[in-house]
Length: 362
Image (cartoon, rainbow, N blue to C red):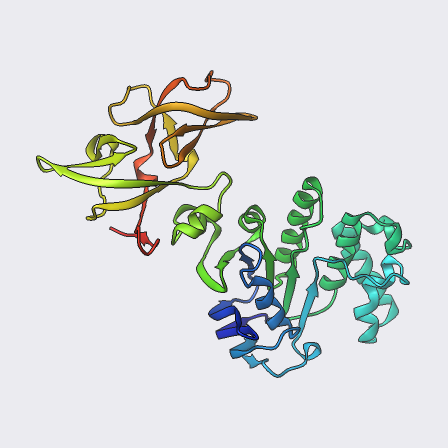
């Protein structure tokens, strides 16, 4: 089994509240990411599960067993670190074999299991090398192999991809996910990189300022962010957040966007909040260049554009902020300051409360 439960867990460093009463559950065989900016409390949370930090208040369980007062070695967890933490005097084989030797596993089984995990992670050619002779990527793979070879209820991965270059990150995150699925491991992965979390996770726990902002599948986190923090933190480029004023004239609803009065019916919106002011949120991929003039669209001038392969990232100036969207690079020619009109995909429009920042529901 591999189940983790935190019940109203706090972490205090003196008077500083690093983690503020969070509750969560991780199920057997799940890959769950703790995602958030630096200093949000995600690593403190991981270290409390590992036993490297004391739990200030609340309770933590692994497989139903209260672990608050258990030593790290008795928690049935394995951990891979941001720093490689390899033994410099041991070669790759012995670094990986170490957790098995401590448990007095027979030599033949050690050899078989080390070779198998090294083959999976693409480091079989380094078995006789010492850490000082390895690249950063090979060292990180060795550290991961040492963590994954150890039998554990939960595997804790702390920013293990952060020091790698883009190509190695892409390759290794796919291998980690493949191994986790094949071996049916329970994993808790800490990252500040939203792309890693979206690509690898069964569920994502988004944290900020020591608190959980949202728990959901990658699709839920990306498509329906629970508040403005999640909306602006997850996604590259992030979700557009537009300040909206609502007006009603002749029983028709209008949205005032950067001084433009837009008919909600022509925008295709079936529902808007019954508020005078709120925020509208929409992903750049859900905005299209309109060929119908201003009717049913938002007009402006091209402020910036960047070619990103098949798509170009474009923005128009709406006064308080730019509205960013994607257009097909090969179908469109752009010039700075040229007039342009865009339309929103109505089914993908979200609304947020201006005071609480929370998602508004119909």
